[in-house]
Length: 89
Image 1: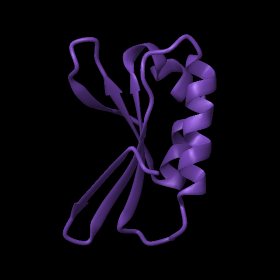
Image 2: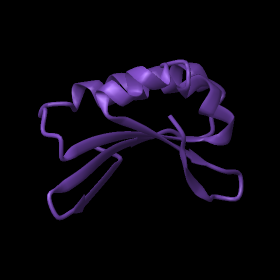
Image 3: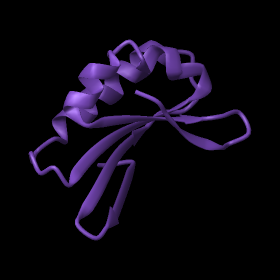
Image 4: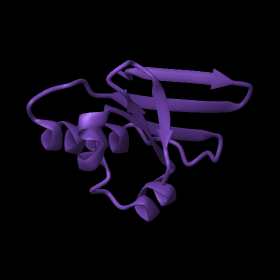
């Protein structure tokens, strides 16, 4: 089951969101695995996203930016005041 799915025209974003937990690294690794299993189409109209709290951004960035770009995985940060920001790749 997908945590977040957004559609606009032909574009589709499939996202996995992780909350504020003690196991930040394991959660990020799990989320990447979940995203990879959901990559069932090579359509350029589909992107994937990992959505994590600020405290987990460092763990999500362990997958290098160039790899995230190749896989079309965007990283979004949810700040402590619940603002959502795209995190630069």
